[in-house]
Structure formats: structure tokens, C-alpha cells
Length: 134
Image 1 (spheres, one colour):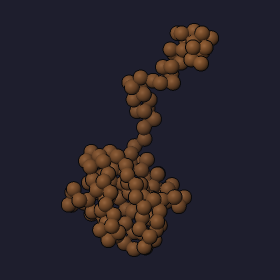
Image 2 (cartoon, helix red, strand yellow; image 1 turned 60 degrees about the horizontal axis):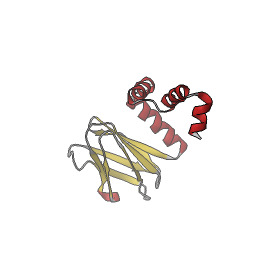
Image 3 (spheres, helix red, strand yellow; image 1 turned 90 degrees about the vertical axis):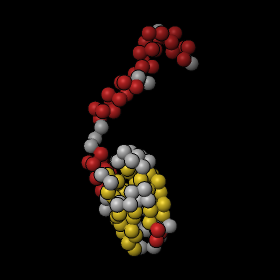
Image 4 (cartoon, rainbow, N blue to C red; image 1 turned 45 degrees about the vertical axis):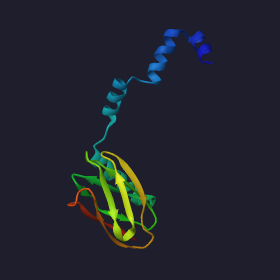
């Protein structure tokens, strides 16, 4: 099929079309930068929309701190780590231990039992937070 397209449009046009569909890394990075939103704004909007829709909630890790987390029992929680360090999200009472890579994401399911759960990072002892499950 590609041979037929090359014959119909000419090899030069096909090469230009291929570059438009599969941009070079430099072009892709420039496009990403042009449309990139602030992580703080993005995570705030995302957290608001996910909580309002009932699909789940987002826990953001930024500046070696956990954001506030309020989630319905059994819902999916997305963890967004904006720090350049790997962190863990641990809630001993819930039997929860999730590793979140630097500048990465992870997910977990909120406990089925409503309550307040203490969150810690096993790697950075100064990091504490709480998860309120309703």
C-alpha cells in the first residue's frame, strides 16, 4: 500500500507527509513545549475534575510534600510526583505501599473502610500527609 501511495503522490510528497505524521524529536519537543501547561495548574484542574466526576482523586507530590487527599472508598487514586526524586506513598493502616518514580505517576485503590489514614514516604522520613476516605 505504501508503494501505491508513493507512486500516486511522488516520493518527495510522501517523505514530507511522513515527517508531518512522525516529527523528529526536536520538532516534537518544540510542539510539546508550546502546548505544555503548568504542572501545578494542570494537577489542580485535574484533581478538581476527577473528584467532581466521582471517578477518583489525585494525590500530588511536589516540593517534598503530599497534597490534600479526600477520596470516596474504593475509588482509584492517581499519584502525580512532580519532584525529581522517587517517593513512596505508604499508609500502614490500609496496607498501602506504592513507589512513585521521579516526575512520574502511579495509581492505587482507596481503602474500602472510611476513615483518616496517615501517609508517609519511606524514603524521606520528613514527608507526612493524610488521606481522608469517605
